[in-house]
Amino acid sequence: MGILGDWDVAIKTPIGTLHVVYNFTELDQVIVGSAAGQGETVSLSDIVVTPAAGGLRATWRQTVTKPMRLKLDFDVLVSDDELKGHSRAGRLPRTAVTGRRRT
Image (cartoon, rainbow, N blue to C red; front, side):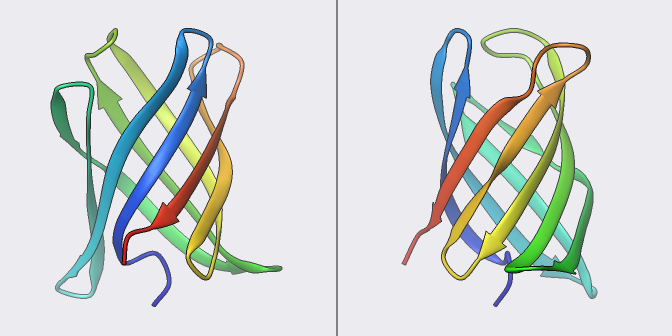
């Protein structure tokens, strides 16, 4: 199953924990995704999923405007119905990311 499906994700930022719902689907054998939270839904870009020790490594990029305009890079390890990793916005410190697949 990999990363496909809906995920409840928590992103721990300096301004507090953001709760976002991610959706990953496959379209013409390419993984596409979106993130919904903080009053906006954004598309994900550059999604790459590769085998890794303990599961699958997934990376992607997204741009948000709320709570402020940021370009984010994500790097997570997907293991069964959980994901864990980090996101980074430019030179800002990276932030912890955890998630659980919706059933």
